[in-house]
Image 1: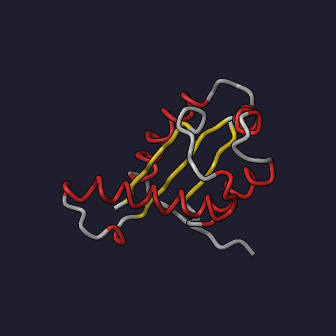
Image 2: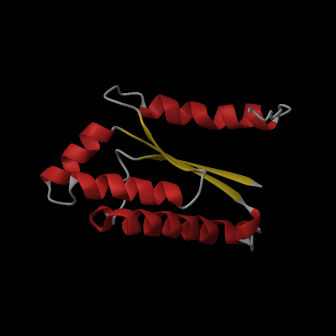
Image 3: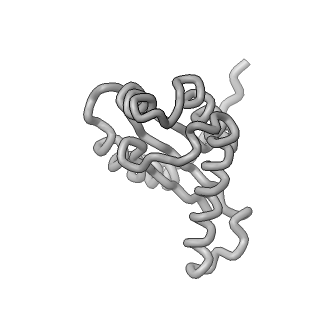
Length: 128
């Protein structure tokens, strides 16, 4: 099974930014564990069977400004956190929506796109 988790990164701020790369890895691992614990009562005992897609939509400039202004982390720690989170899995992504207010609309449209993809035949070609 595929589990799609879409997060508004402007509203739901992770802890661990100050820990940089290690903080990002830890946040991704912790989030995966929390989702697994949530799914166990639904019959998913072994989360190794699940393909997790975790996509965090955020406005990089605004979030970074808020975190640095409050002394939570530096720019380097912020960038390293995102790198660590994304390195936990190829399917763990931070998506910068820029300065527009499109976070919500992009989040709402993504699950529908995944459903359409799942119901379509997927053709993969090797590009050389």
